[in-house]
Image (cartoon, rainbow, N blue to C red; front, side, top):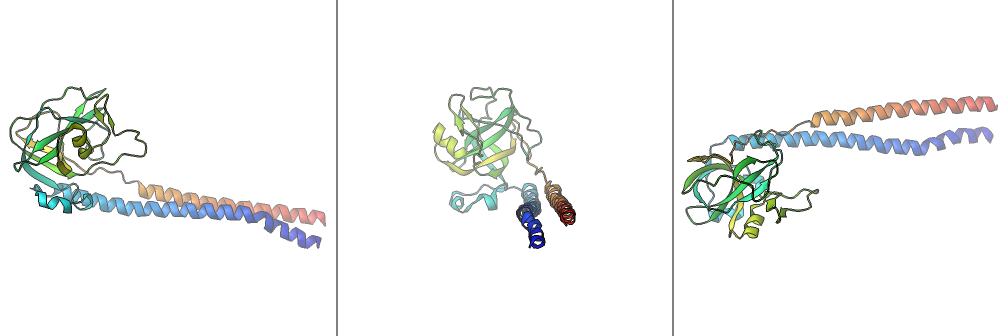
Length: 260
């Protein structure tokens, strides 16, 4: 009975550590696989963005087509159109580092300005970036060109706030923290605007700052490195646990021989 009890005690002592190690091993494998899936998704996204941003510009979508447009299918499509900026109607948006524009070096702000299309509808245009160490709604920025202009840009949809943002708009500083032209239009009483805004690439005639820029997909793709890291940790865990189990068994065997 004593020998049988000694044989059962090592197995019982290994049960909980084995379950914990197995759970951790499965989690590490799952994280590695998730990173591989993210790599495939990121590669598809980069390819899609590259294709859309290098395509020839299309005509501006007609109003009847707006309900059928979605960010999944039409965001980053290039368009060319005529419009006239509304004077003294800017909204300033706090600028963060951009994965689509290398020339944006915060701190600074983007200037969003409503423009009237030939049919009378309003579209909001992100005219570009202005560097400023302490931006607020009163920060100086050049006025847009007067009269009709030809704008070349890409379609963008309203930005969703991140989990860490406590406010979308600071009325005291008159500064936005999300690129949401619908919220801007409601706050500043611009009237009805298109469900998308336009990220300006260029304009004729040009009007200098705020500087527009060509969008280029420059998204980081480190998912393979992350996947190898997680898989490597799973292998290390398995090896360390196997060595620990072997050591425990040796200790039990030595203790059993001494007890005899």
